[in-house]
Structure formats: C-alpha cells, structure tokens
Image (cartoon, rainbow, N blue to C red; front, side, top):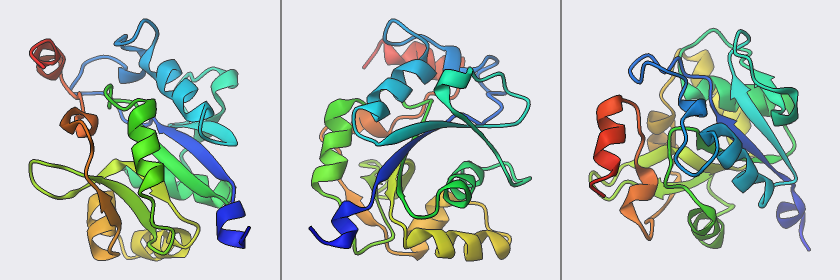
Length: 193
C-alpha cells in the first residue's frame, strides 16, 4: 500500500455558522429522528478514523462531539477547514456541512469511490449550475498549504478555492445531496421533494 492510500481520513462536521437566516441552530434541527449535528457526526464516524465538529468558541458543542474551535476570525466555512488542517496537518479531511440533510452513507460512498487523490480535493458538482459544492468535500493533504496561501491573500470562498485549484468534481446520484437548508422556507420545501 502506498503512502497516499495509507493517509488517515478525519471527518469534520461544519457547524460554525450563525444560523441567522434559519433563526435557530441548524445543528439542532431534526430531519432523521435526532439532532442533525449528531446524525451527521454518526455518518462520518462510519467512514473516518476520527470525527470533529467545527464550531465557534462560544458554541455549546458537547465534548463527545469533539468540538474544534475556529482559529481564524473570518466568517466562512473555510475557517473550519483551515483550523482542522492546523490541528491535524498530516491527514485528509472529509468535511460536510450540518445543513445538508440529504448527505447519507450512499453519498459519502459515491464521493470515496470517485475520489481523485492527485487533485487537492474531491467534491460534488451541483447539477443545477455545474459548480463545485464546497461543503461536502474530501480535502487531500496537498490542499493544506494551498488553503493557507489562499486565506493569507484575503480569500474566504471555499467554492472559489475549488474552482481555482481544479478540484475533482463528482456528479451526485441524487441531486438533493448538494442541497443546503438555510431558511425556514427551505425546510418547508423539503416536504415537496
């Protein structure tokens, strides 16, 4: 087994947003019979050596969900991704946003099956606009220095990073996988899918 294949993969649930559009903590919403943060954490545990929760220092994340507090003072999921690499730089990271209720075991298996370890990242392609979906991504160790340089230039968009660094894009089997539920209106529309 070569070194690339033996690199551990850690999981990170991106839960550091302020949920201002939703009006309540998106990690506490129940789509699957338990709080979404716990649900997503459990999925990642099935695929990753260790799993952490990316969050702001003032968030009350239970210790058993391994809170990893944002190290940067930027409002972007890239904060959690860079923080994770700073904490554990010699692993690959599978990151999933807590507000993606259709990400399940099958979606993660698809991402792993089509993973390209020569690219800095593998992520889903949004079927609607063909752009990378940055919030469900496998980040290779090679992405870390590129992410640091990106942030040091004042950039904060993970999608812009993935476009600019030629991430490997995977078409999801179910288009709903890339859906983010950010507002109460989004939640109400779920029943129509």
